Length: 524
Image 1 (cartoon, helix red, strand yellow):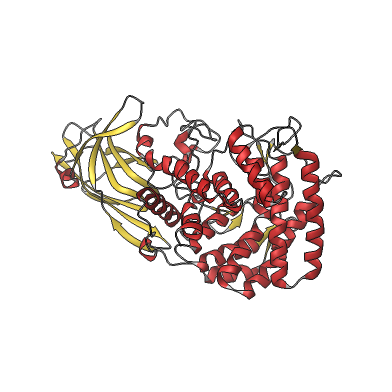
Image 2 (spheres, helix red, strand yellow):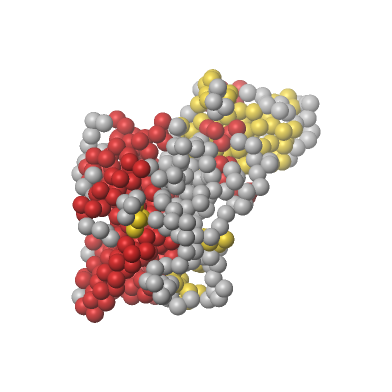
């Protein structure tokens, strides 16, 4: 794990006007009662993966008398986010000791078989959705205080006395979201896989839309700026909840620090406050979120308020350039995210993202009729494009390299295409050559794959982009996804940046964008 870029001097600057606007836009959550659809039994297959080998009606639940060591697994049929109530009773003699039970919530089936006791990764074990409970008095209705993200629930009896058994009369969940899937029209296509990809994208987005756009309802349950950008784009083509985008933009804009820097993410409880982590690329991309919002709404007041903050991020980004006109190599730090790929050097991509953000800054300045900023950014951007070619283009390989070891990665090529360092035809040749070469440092997150698809479409390779959506997100569905995952590496399906898939998020905001691409560029 690279070191985290935590700011040495951390002083939050609050814009009370912005925070009031955000508070007024706080949504009311939709709720729905959800019951399990079946009781299942699982076993490992020849690939050491869990699969269902037997199922029963949930009506059979109250007939089961569970003794120590016995368990029951409930399948709620799809991924849900919400609160769970257990109606518990007993069978036999009067309860003469506490019932000691273990609950394990899982977003996907394989999580039920994951060994969590030995987990010692760098992300806190506290995110693992499991509970150990003592029930002193039965019968009881027990409403669990935590919010869970899950499809499956295992209830295991750790201890009861010899005189009684535990009975689970009913398990009910109350799902919560700021939006409803009923608000979204179906995708107009006869292609069943694309329909499924679209539906899973929408459910992923819906379950991450809570009081803000969360990055993941299981983990981290906060608002990351990079995720917000992609969620907002998908939202404009589905739920059209522009108020939530506006709320999130004002929250980020209302809580700046250190010369106007934007935090990489915001915590929501006990009150909203910024994390002390700065990500170079996330801060720069704020301007694209503002521009997308303005184009979707025509809300000039919001543009007037947030334009200076967006331009400020570019000004800050430019201060990191060295005397050669490039961004120094900070790949050993969690400083510019780009992707989770192991060993990824982010130096060249950092410069490309800076150039990309300047393009959005120019467009914002055009809407603001800010001629001075247009001229300044345009001139500076051309200089940086030349620097990118001079320092990172390898003519022999016909690819961009990054860092002292001249690493070739997918991410570097994709971001150089999006930055439009070359013209469209040369960009098209670059992305096709990248596919042919297939660099060893691959993309591993749907976040990076989003930008890959974007680069293909912008290079007039729409059919290839559609093929790649089918291959990547479609394969996730074939692997059992009800919602799309934080990380998916087809070459290593058990990859985790945290030390174990036990803490991976299997409903993650940045993976929801196939619905954006399908509805914007293909099936409008």
